[in-house]
Length: 266
DNA sequence: CGATTATGATTAA
DNA sequence: TAATCCTAATCGC
Image 1 (cartoon, rainbow, N blue to C red):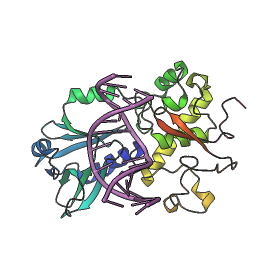
Image 2 (image 1 turned 120 degrees about the vertical axis):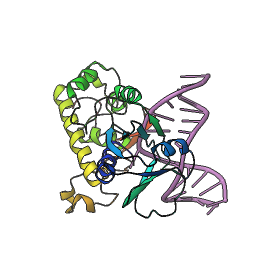
Image 3 (image 1 turned 90 degrees about the horizontal axis):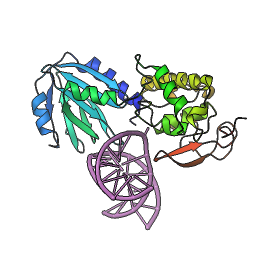
C-alpha cells in the first residue's frame, strides 16, 4: 500500500524505534549483501521521508535509499526475529525490535549528492512542512496536462498515488481530464488542503481513508476495507448511485463519477 | 497450480 | 506506448 502516507508513517515508526540505536544488518536474499555488510553494526542517525522515498542516515555517512515501488513491503518484528518470509532483501534489528524489507523497487547506498539529486527531481509533498504550494500553483496554472496526470507526476506532486488521485478529484467534483490550467485558485487551494488533510489522516491510521467515519457511526480505524474509499475501484457512486467509470490516464486506471465530476463547469 | 492483479516508476522505442 | 523490474495475494480451474 505504498503511497506517500505509508512512507511517512514508516519513517516516523522507524525513527522512533531505531534512530540512535546500533543495528545488525543482513540481506537474507543476498541481493543487498554488500550494502548490508557496510551498514552492519552502525548506529542509525535519522530517517527521512520525501514523497515515496525513504532515506536512512548512518554514522559513517552512508545514506540508505529505499523506494518500495508497487510491491515493496516492510514487516516489523520484535527480537528475536522469526525466519525470513519470502524474498527478504534487507533485514535489520537492534536489541528489541527489527524489520524485514521485501520487494523494494530500490534499495541502495548513496551519498549526499545523490540524495540531493533525487530530492531535486521531486515536486511538493503534501506531508512535508517545507512544501511550497505557491510553486505548485505556478506549475498547475501553466500546465496544459490533465489534472489527473499532474497529480501522479512525482516531479509535480510527490507522494500522491493512484488512490489519492481518484479520491481527491472526486471529493472536489473535478473531472480527471480537466486541463490543470483551467482550475481556479480556489479550486487549487481546496485540493491542496484536502491532500494535506487526507494524507495526514492516512499516516495516522496507516491506511487511506477518504470517507467521514462518523457517517458510518464508527471510528476511522474500525472502517472495513469496503467503507474507506469513495470512488477508487468502486462500482457505484456513494453520492448519486451513478455507475463509476474507469479508464487509463497517466498509465494507470482512473475512477470517476460521471455525474459528480462533470468535465464542464456546472 | 497457473493466471491475474496491484496503492510505482524507469527505460527503450 | 510498451517492456521491464520487484513480490505476494487472490482467484479460477
